[in-house]
Image: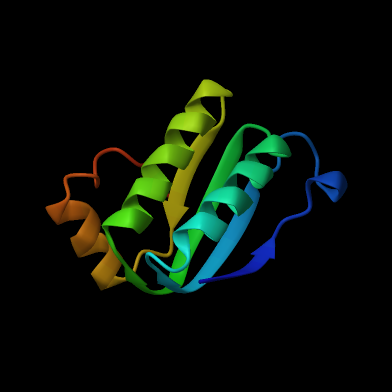
Length: 107
C-alpha cells in the first residue's frame, strides 16, 4: 500500500476536502501503516476526508477494518469519510461485506 498524495490542508481553505490517494494492496502487511497515516491525516482534516481507492489492487478483512475504524474516528471528530474511485473489486468487496451502505461514495 502506498499513499500517493495527500492534499495539504495548510494550503487549502477550511471547507476544502482532504484527499488521500491509495495504491497497491491493503492487507496484513500494510494495515498498521495505513491506520497510522489515516489517524495522522484526521488530525489535520476538516469536514471531509476522501479516500481515493482507484489504484488499490487488493483489500482484505484487515483493510476493511482500517476503513471502518477510520470512519468511526472521523465521525467522532465531526468529519465525513467518503470513498471514491471504487474499482469493480472494491465495489464487490464492500457489497458482500454489507459495508456499501456505510460509506458515502464521492464521484
